Amino acid sequence: MVSLICTLQDHRDEVYWCAFSPTLLATCSGDKTIRIYNTSDFSELPFSPLSGHRYGVHCCSFSVCGTYLFTCSTDALTIIWSMATGEVTTKFEHPGGSPVRVCSLSPDSSLLLSGASDGTLALWDFHSKKLRKSKAVTEATVMACCFTPCGQMFVTGCTSGDIKVWDLDMKQLYAERDAHDMGVTCCHFAPQFHIDFSSVEFRLASCGQDSQLKVWIVSQHGATACEMKLLHTLTGQSAPVLSCAFSSDGELLVSGSVDKTVTVYNASDGVLLHTLKRHESFVTACAFSPTLPWMATGSMDKKVNVWRIADRESGQAQSRNPSCQGAGRKLSGHSRLLVSDWSEEDVLAWLSEEGLEELVTTFTTNNIDGPELLCLTKETLASELSIESVGLRGKVLRKVEALKAELTGLDAPDEFLCPITREVMKDPVIAADGYSYEREAIESWISAKNRSSPMTNLPLPTTLIMPNRSLKTAIGRWTATQ
Picture 1: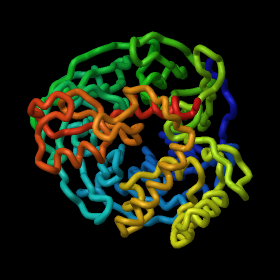
Picture 2: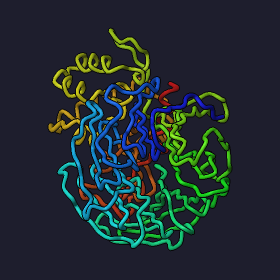
Picture 3: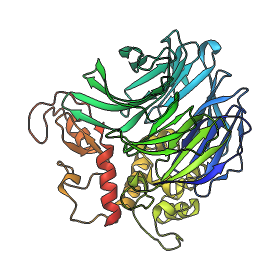
């Protein structure tokens, strides 16, 4: 069941894109502004709207923890905004000054990719703020780009209809010619993937002017071999499909169309679940929240609709990413039972109780609340919160994991235990032997120059490891029931 919970009508021109962080919703428009809403009540933040682009803003994307927002525009700029203050932190001007149509951030927030109307790509290093590489990749306009979940490849889609796969040196690995007749409009990877020894498979959704939504299997074989195979062609809409997105658990796929509808599919089998008809013009944008049962859609009617997604079996709205919800815990002085409900003040109180007073200023500046606390990673602590001390970052992560582990009992299913440590996994990854391990444990195993499988003792075809987000979600769900 999907129900409309609110309609945001603050933009004065058509809405081009929308994006969620753990606690915020961003929307951008032809009116040159970006508006930021708090997902607790969808009230607009004090510093919203953001005004820094000279022309319409085509795309927006949050960093993993939601500390930064990235936007791009016809003015050839990609701007990074602080979500603590609403201020501009960095401006990247696209090489050649061409209008930027789309931008994408790598999963670890280390690389920023932008695609332009002149067919060029620019890859920026987020930490150094320097251009890593720029290249003309098509004679058409780049309309879509996104990174694989591992962050080692990305795909592009253009108005000529081609979808191409690239490595981080912008070497073309594969090209699917005429993937969409008359042009590609959007593409998005599911967070989940499958690894089978030396092969890794990702699911990619793409949509286009041919009125079709397609799901592909993108396979990587070794470091340089890659191929795409069509899995589903979905035809639930009668006009060009302009936007598409997977839910964070990979179970749902949404698309918006020129026919003014929003369609929601079962991402596994392509079955149409819902057709939503609450927009008055072309639906140009759609996005799922990573932590809450929300979905947002934007349209040329200048409106953003926010929808509540209920679990198909129970009818109750549930988070699509339970692993970020965390354990139930109430400390003295805390007003909320669940960590996921903690306010910024609750997080500061927790820091003091855990002996992390030195981070109070940093967390205050970055407005870290409960959901963001539970989604912290070593990458976001370093890149977004600028915590330089490796030891301090490790201490924070251990404390956060302790919060999540408080409800973890001793009767965990065996598949939730790392074969090396025999502890419930916090960051499960899949190795080339097909088994899942705790990231730190298997990395230590491999770094010790042990190239054999801990389970089979056979040689590992590759040392590549990939996040197992579906297992992490399952562990999170189990933890939440203990």
